[in-house]
Structure formats: C-alpha cells, structure tokens
Image (cartoon, rainbow, N blue to C red):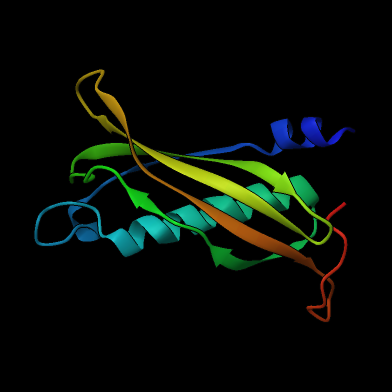
Amino acid sequence: MTIQERIDKSATTIFKAVFPNTTNHYDTLFGGTAMQLMDETAFITSTRFSRQQMLTVSSDKIDFKRPIPAGTIIELRGYVTHVGNTSLKVRVDIFVEEMYSESREKAVSGEFTFVAVDENKKPVKVL
C-alpha cells in the first residue's frame, strides 16, 4: 500500500452533539474540551495510519476561529499531513453545524505530532 493510500484510508471523522455540560458560562464549548476531542481524533487517525502504538508529542498552533455554541453538532476531521521516520503529523479541523439548518462553518483547526513507540515506549519507524 502506498503512503497516499494509507493517508486516505486513515482519515477519521467523528460527530458529536454539544451539550450544556461541555460548555462554559458563555454557553460555548470549552476550549480544553475541543482540544481533548481533537487530540483523540488525531490519535485515532495516527493509529489507523500506522497500526502501531502512538503517543502525542506536541500540538502545534490551534486556531479558534469561531465559538461553538451549545445545541450544535460538531464534526471533527483528522488526516495525516506529514510522515517522518518515527513520527507523523495529523491535522484536525472542527466544523460546527446548526442542528436545524444547513449552516456549517469551520470553527477550530490544529495539528498534532505523534511518535510510534515499541512496548518499552522507545521510538520505532512509523512504516
């Protein structure tokens, strides 16, 4: 399988409803909750790509472009953007949708770096 085929097969999409228990006093999704969901999506994407144990080693700039209100649906999309020797990068975008309209907009985006490790948590080749 080529690297591009692996990238295509590992792309991950997760949908969530934004409920009040995940929002702040402005009734918008907590930034930390968004980052947790993004890291989880990136982890799944990296694992689907490599089929190895993967650890988050960093998150790059995360841009919060618009607030995510309670009572909306979010779509998290993760896809591999770079493959190194022992690490890879995964971009995650969050799109927000109104529940009862066709309104849809990118709200958050960021990139996460993962490293492949063996049973002793030592880096190994991604492929």
